[in-house]
Length: 166
Length: 236
Image 1 (cartoon, rainbow over the protein chains, first blue to last red):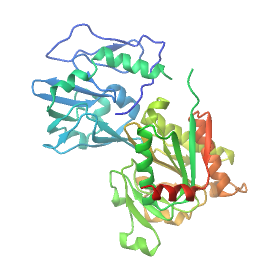
Image 2 (cartoon, rainbow over the protein chains, first blue to last red):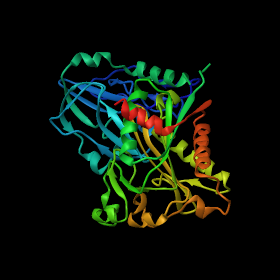
Image 3 (cartoon, one colour):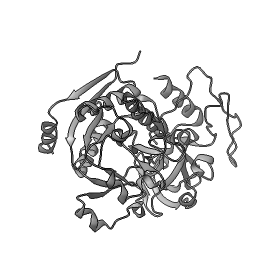
Image 4 (cartoon, rainbow over the protein chains, first blue to last red):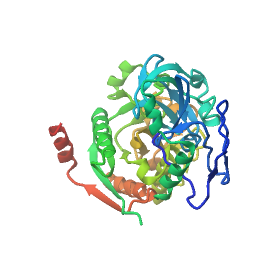
């Protein structure tokens, strides 16, 4: 998602939970209510997608910030299972407020599962961007690509800096 | 201190829909590569019906074969939004801009497009408003005067807005406009008794409202649109 954040640069925005759990995602909480959540245990792309890497499977979706800036999602277009995705290339699109926005894959690999619930309930992306609103599961072809993605603290800082530039 | 932002405007007159799609594709790539500044195409189309990514062709109420008879084309596109009609005396703007460089997302972008049209309508004393939830667009009361359908790829926008100046509204009877069944379509001509200036002036005013809404410091108008289009064709 090539979307920008609208965060107040004067606010010390997000406190991240210091305990990292492997079995579940620890939610961060925001001092400033207008800002969105960033979770521990995930990696982030600068186009605002997240990746959860568990063994040989990586799950991909868009971040809370991304969904907030899209508005209500009314339609999701996803690739076919057994297709492939490439790092920083589009793999699908979401539609909201009469705008279709492409989604870019943070990593390369084979699509092993697609979230079919999003066809009937595209709004899951808004209500549960990190869980029920997941988009695709991928078998990464170059696990090293994950290293170049941002961690939660870095992503949070990225959002603030992106915004402070204006 | 931020550097001044320039919007380049291409005044293209009447352009065939497919031709405008090809031009936009090229401009999106060039904008992505930072070869051109933020650019907006200001134009009209010959009678054309278009569908968005969701391909809601159940909202076309006449058979496709009929379209030739009424002198219209039909195109499927990758933009958001439902079915709509474009035609003479409808002002269209296709901003090809980098949302990253203005620092906004899809929702904010679309709201600013709506504000541009509302501001423009107010020049003629027409009180327009943004759509209610799920009814993106610009309305005068319950009548739709402006439509929006946008595509964003890697943060660069294409497609855009269409504002009815004085189109033949009968063309809208062959569709369920934007998929909203029980609402009328209107035009600037219908909503005001003010004498309207030339279409060229109207287009310039609409562009100026857009430039102001997006806080551009400078607007550069590109002359000789036919030359631009032909040059682009020639350089392909």
